Image (cartoon, rainbow, N blue to C red; front, side):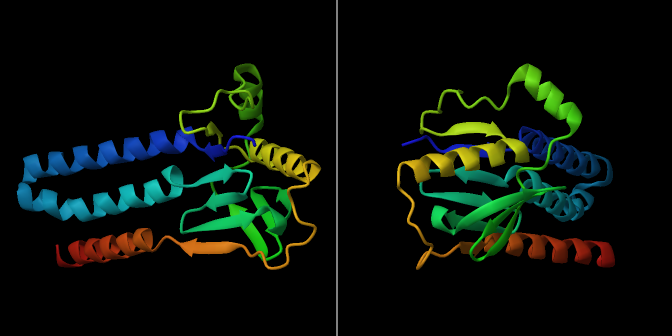
Length: 198
């Protein structure tokens, strides 16, 4: 049994932290300069920006395990059991093909040529990184590394005869991130009210 490989973006985490720090600094600065009321009016737009940045850049990730591929995008998570997986296409972005339709992958953008050269020298995507305490291996979220791991894992599971010949009775599951959507809607309404009412 192979460890679970988790692909996410370090850049996205730093971007989210920077957005949160900038939002707090802006709210505190406005509250200090223009009063507590002005700071509170800025809180909803600032929180909206941080929530959207978090949803787009921190939260997305892909987990590749022996049981399935879990794709967590901005607004929904898709669970792809191995029998449903039919291949991938890597053009401007990565798309996984399944028996239940295509699944775009937000967490693993195609890397630039400069990033590929840098990765060759730093070897950030090494498969032999030691697993974390929970048994997972955390890797850079590039589309090329993800496709390589998916193909390696599918090949190993097929060779071990762990995969059924057909996907009969096995479905891709999709779950919408309802709390994230609700948070964005509430903060967007609050932001609109602040902008319209002053």
